[in-house]
Length: 624
Image 1: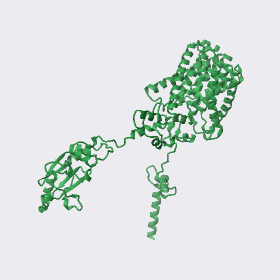
Image 2: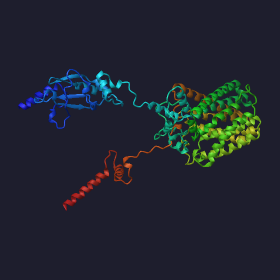
Image 3: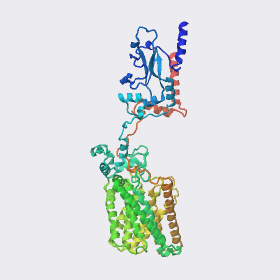
């Protein structure tokens, strides 16, 4: 009984110093307890030299005296030290704890308020602590002696080149890979990495990507959406430089506006539309706006070619984007055809040769890939955007014939007609090897109307009259237009992009061909059809203009990160589940059987019935 009372009194006395949750035990009763033999180094204050160099992580100490040991002298007393490892950095712990002097047996020893540490640790449980350099030796001793927070010392950062390495990811797409920037920095006296260091960081993904890689990593009618299982070379959560976000499809705006200038010129000068009393000033304004747009977009994209040539090269090998490399020259052909009479009544023939030379060079490259049977064969990469490479032939034939050139327009008309027939049949067949044709209606399908519309105008200009050949091409375009117009859900459920502007000029081309046809066949039907098609084209362009302004200035997402140029060369490794490790494993078979035999509540019906049968048979055997 007396021993129990003494223990009870000892507990009451110890509760004043230690928290109630900590069990009070005698240190010498525990075998192997941390016992450190120390001298009386703490008498009137705190001496930092008493801390053991290897015990720099010790923050809080508890000292327990052993009563009844009078045989030890005061200079050779044994102190038992309990070491607690804090979950927080040293500086935070020193800041949150209360340091004081605790007396024991007429001696002063350093201690910390354990209750204060428990409270602060509980309150700071949600605090995030980042990795910091570990202080050692005299640096830590000086910081503790002076009362400073070790985390606030002026020390070099742990990863000084981390931000620089993040920025270098954009350098991989630069033309000079940052060489000019490094030279400028060296002239300013700032040290930059050497060429050997940059070559070690240069990834292999900058190499030319095959067409299959674009099909595997991207999806959508325009192959501009990254698949969920893919990763890109550039950061997803960071806004890229503007030039990297400026795609070649931005020239679609030039196509829509410049073709609209041609339509209003035809409305103002045609005899069949004089009842509309259209002024040529509309054509002049639209043509000037088109010139400004072509110059502005061309200037920005030239900057992209100069500074980010790797990104331009990736767009060139993109199965869809490669067709938009015809767009700048098509826009220039539209400007030549829609020039107002007040600006120039007759253009020089040398302009036609200048504009058609790059078109011819691109056709040699693109059409050759269609026939070669490689990664860019037509049966694999055929998509409605390929019509852009066809329209350039008919526009060149139309412009050359209007200038009085004889052989050149016929040559390009023949080349365009041959490849249009092949492309038309390939797209209509929807071969299994073709992977990017959209299954649902999409504005890209309006490009089907562009080639036959412009072909009818070109053949009419070559022949000098809207004869049967021109009418056949026009009727094909008119039928395709009507078959697409009855599907009103074309612009629903799709993310807006600048490429939609390129899908508006086929409507304008159909309206211009109708104006030309109404001159030959003038009646109420052709006049009404002309007004309707011109109104639809105008409303479409106006609607896209409003949507573009909203996305540019309100939503600020007109130029999102162009993930199509940042895909990696290597395919991501598929993640295998644990039960897919072995096809013939018993666990896999048992899982399949359970899924086949279980009901909605997850109970295995067949297994329960089989278990009952086994139990019944076993009971019968025991009875026998």
